[in-house]
Structures are given as C-alpha cells and as structure tokens.
Image (cartoon, rainbow, N blue to C red; front, side, top):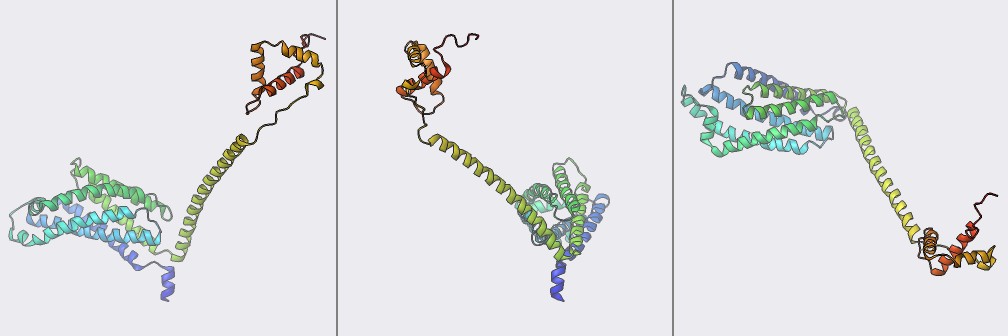
Length: 333
C-alpha cells in the first residue's frame, strides 16, 4: 500500500507547505491592514509587534522557499533557479538571526519601558550597528535576487505554465516595490505586503495542485518535456556539427584542388598545323606588346607557372585556332 502511494503521489510536505503558504498570505494581509490603520510608531507594544512579525515572516518565508527549492529540483527537475534561491535563503537568514537576537534580548526592555516610546529600528541600530548594516545590505541583495528569481520562475512551462508566469511576475513586482520603498519613492507598506501575499498564495496553489497530480503521470509528462528539450538540443548540436563537417569537406576539396599535381598543358606538334607557314610567320612578326598580351591570355587558364616553350606553343595554338594570321577572316563571304 505504501509503495503504491509513493509511486502515485508526492510527499505530504508539499501539501503541508501549501497550507502554510495560504495561512502566511492571510497573515500578511491582516498585518498589512494593522500596519496601515492601527500601527502607532514609537510605542513599545507596536514596535515589539512589528519586529516580532518581521522575524516570524522571514522565518516562515525561509521554510517555504526551502521546500519550493526541493520541489523544483526533485519534482520538476528544474535547477536553473537553484543559485538564486540559495542566495535568498542565505540573506533571509541574516535578518532572522540579527533582528531575532536583538528582539529576544530586548524583550525585558520593551516591557520595562512601558509607555516610554522608541522606534524599533532605532532601538535595533543602537543595540548593534554592525547588525543594522548587515540588515541593510541583506535588503539590497534580496531586492536584486527577488527580481532575478521572478524572471527565472516565469519561464517555467513544463506544468501549470500560467501559474508560474503569475508567480514570476509577482516576484518581480515585489522586488521593484521593495526598491521603490527603500529609496522612499513610495511610503506605503501595501506595495510590499500585497505582492508578497500574492506570491505566497500562488506558490501555495502551485504546490497544492501539483501534490494532487498522479506522480507517475507527472513524471512521464516531465520525461517527455525533458526528452523533447534534449532532442532539440541534440538536433541543434548535430546540425551545427554537420555544417562544420560539410565546411571542412569543402575546404579539404579546395585544398586538394590546389595541391593536386601539375596541370596537363596541351602541346601541339607545329609541323602538323594547318597553314603552318602562315601561323609561324604571324607569330614571328608579333610585336612585344602583343606577345606579352597573348602570354597573359594563354597563361590565365593555368595555375602553374608556364615555361617559355609552353607559352610559345600555346600562343601558336591560339593563333592557329582563331586564324589570327588571316586578316580577311571577318570579311563577308
């Protein structure tokens, strides 16, 4: 029974993570409403709650991303987003540790300083300047990585193509929104919370839909996609190799044509020529310029250097064939 389950369904961790992603998306919406309408800055309770949710949010998102990485690798056999997700996990761990350690060490201060307001970020920075700098750098890196990751994710088309496209563009919007908020172009937190809630919900829906698929059918579908991609790549490589092979053959043939032995230069016995006396008389009376011109004419048909005797014989053949000695050859008959 268990073997059949393993073969036809995905591990339950994906379905569980989908549920967590839904709950996480709902909590983000609730916190966004609280932050927009009820949050009071520079009060101990609201500062503690905001910092606490920031640590909780980063930790939950860390877990969801980790499972999503396993899902891409083991289920979809897609590894192009690996490096970006790993970078995201590393730079998510920084605020979890830095902000979390300061938060827990400051719990007595929050409760001891009742009604003595102070901003949570100022409290964090005063506690650890180095941690504050790490947090700022982490935010910058996460903005860039989120945009790049969104661009990679939107190109996944093996299954649920439309959902992956929505997820990818939502990540890009989240990265751009975070950048705009970081440079104070937009002050509202909605530009961050809303895209992040959409990302979590869509990611959860993808995991839920995939976990309900028959794993054997899913694997065969993915194998067909992978084989098609491999065959396409092989076809391109084969076509390129064939072109290179043809080109090498053509070059080889050209080299062979160039490097073949001496060409056969026709040689005619002058004594057997018709009108031998006229031909020789015409040849002997050629001017130097005309003789040079005829040498060029007969030599251009050969790649090898001709001897003087060969040139002479070819010129005599030329004169004989064209009857150059007959000045009336073009006269009307």
